[in-house]
Image (cartoon, rainbow, N blue to C red; front, side):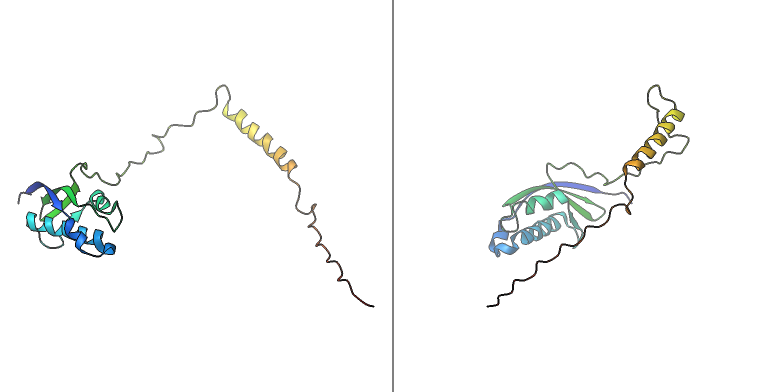
Length: 157
């Protein structure tokens, strides 16, 4: 069975969403868009998928003020309809699997110019005792003593 691919461009009127309460307009605009595409592309219910960009365009001015119209491209393939914005590029995969390099393919780390690996290791060992000498042991420093509260004055006559 050959896959039939049908592409059409529509300008969908969303002003019907303004007949609903302000707190439901963007939701209704998305419903109007889905119903329009389903009717014109002869798709079954639940087979219309909006792209993230098309959904973001409807919701861009918040729930209360969706756009009055939207220009979209609908692509029907194997009974499923994908709706994208007219100026949106084709969707790319979200991620691509990368081939892991084997140990033989990895390049060894380059040493500093003019220094041999043995010299670098010796320099690191020399730094460690100096850093440890600067640290004071925890036992040498005693915790500060709590401050004593002054006695309350007594008034006797």
